[in-house]
Amino acid sequence: MTPAGGAPAARDLTGRPDVEALVSAFYGRAFADPLIGPVFTDVAKMDLAAHMPVMCDFWESVLFAAGLYRRNALHPHLALHRLAPLGPAHFDRWLALWTTTVDALYRGEKAELAKTQAQRIAGSLLRRLNSGDASEFVTIRRRGGAPQG
Image 1 (cartoon, rainbow, N blue to C red):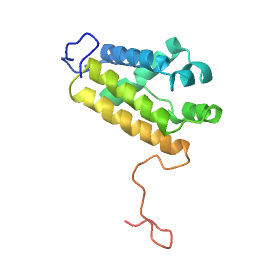
Image 2: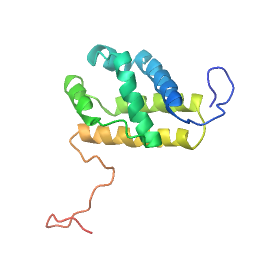
Image 3: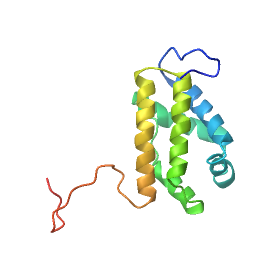
């Protein structure tokens, strides 16, 4: 894919400034989206200026093992889910917007990692919000209930 200007993205994410640019561009798209935008603006009433450093810490930790994010990402999503149930369509849109934004801005190993990790995070959150296991891999159990190993 190509960025809005038409030229292909030429480089990979390399650090905090790239993470900030990516997260900012993503939230610009997400807030404007007719499906998930209202979840951010009307339900969560998100203060984007306050939320940006937290999300940049999260993604810098995910992509560069920075160790800056020390919160539990599930808790705010659980609170939000109680106010406005989040379903597969919400997570699919979030993931599509994230992937499109990454592809518009960056190419390379870290860009691919950003997309892969987003897919894993979206799946895990959706499963956890529906009282499931965080992992996409479910333990196979014997008839007696003991996990097989």
